Image (cartoon, rainbow, N blue to C red):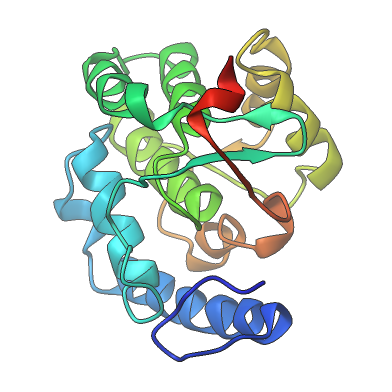
Length: 202
């Protein structure tokens, strides 16, 4: 079933195509118009702005913290009742070294603050932090999709894999639009969220 959207699209495949087309166009604008350079790196407010810009033409919930509990596969993201506290904690996490930045990225992924579009928004958010703090970004071209997804699944327990995987993909080509756009490639995110009730957490 397709998420409620501003176009009234009810077919999930059609919605996915529309979402990809619009979000990629908006991602180019974020880059070309210098909008990303005006955000505060590492803050949830910056992520919310990115998400709102990417998905605002499609969803009413763009940039708004979700009010449902979600999971993908066997992985359950932060419960709604703890989400606000988790985001405050992430805001306060240090980000001066590569390891600290990836640890912050892992925590934001575990939080998954939005109903949809978390992966694409958070990868751009990650690049904003890396660019400011280290003068580098991730070149997603050589990052294997399955290796990435498995590493991200395991990252809340053990983040060594994701740190190693992404460190190999660092580049100083921070103004290369093609490299930037690889970060919102839809092949790098999980398919299908599951909504569950709070009592199912127990």
